[in-house]
Image (cartoon, rainbow, N blue to C red; front, side, top):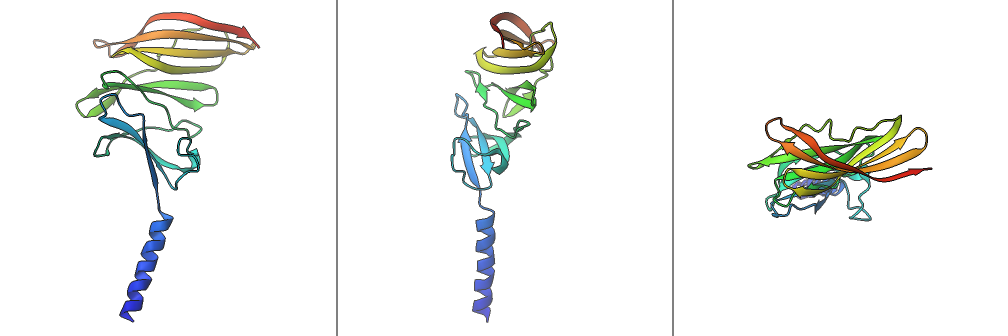
Length: 190
């Protein structure tokens, strides 16, 4: 009877483990190899490079090699995982997230020790005149630590669209980004 109870308990334990199995993917490793994005999925996806957002249970920035969680990384409104853009010195990271079907925002973090602090980026965009319907701002690359090249795609209600590239530099004394340069790179009518 004791042996049967032991197998019964082991069977429950094995079933529970099989039902709570997880898949972990590491990507977007920092240039200094000290940090990376860890994506946790309920099950192993069919395509490990394109994980279905409904399977994702957590997205974290982790320290390597220990995989200690440094911070949570949010998913976009559609559930997708953002692509991190690292500065060459690994002290700055940025990514874009869709906060709805018609807009995306850029998030920027700066490292101090082992922690990353979120910086204020509410105004990290080019001022546009006109009746804007959709606007998507995405980081392209770090020009140097603290100076970011971004792209802003704007779709107007009159079926025009324009794309701008602009550089933004972080100012220590204000704690905010300032637009350094901008140029229109594309304009078309649909």
